[in-house]
Amino acid sequence: MTQVEFWFDPVSPYAYLAFERLPEAFVGLSYAVAYRPIVFGALLKAFDQKGPAEIEPKRAWTFRQVHWLAHRAGIPIDTPARHPFTPLALSRLAWATAPEHGTPGRFVCEQVLRHVWRGGADAEDPDRVAAFTAQLAPRVDPASDANKQRLRDATDAALARGVFGVPTLGIGDKLFWGFDALDMAAACVRGDPWFDAPHWQREGAPRSGVKRR
Image (tube, rainbow, N blue to C red; front, side, top):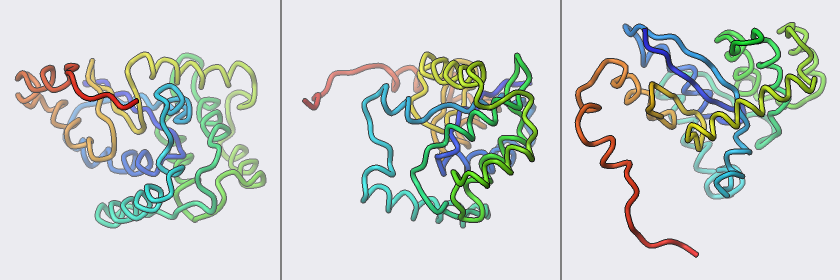
């Protein structure tokens, strides 16, 4: 059985789409997924980048493309009333349901992502979040220092692995970024010989080029 890691932040529509489509993309394969909520904003800060929703033309394109991709894949989606928003409470809630030495289950992650990306409501609305927290019945207080630390640790570990965006799938020492990388990741699990050829190492190697100042 292949172990797959899935790093995501509920603020990302691509993470939602990838989560929903993953079972279809991996059908027929023997695999187990460890779902790891992380802080996308921390990745942006580490690599000195802005998020897509912070650049207006890119934001407009992102949501048009996201809705097209969802339409094509048959995945229901509604843009939340406010975006971007601060997803920390939802990510902490997911970790608060996890076993002490485990990761949140697929059902919980599904509920967190659908809380954001279905219905078009405000994902941060205090009443919604309170009712949602009660519904999931977390094992520990999501706002406890220890639980907050789990989210920080997961984010730091993702950065240490080379994760730079969400969603990212990890299979062995290989990382696959984005909704459109699902089929590539599935091919890796299937043992596609392409991954044994020089392409992966050769194309990922550093090379010279113009550097922007």
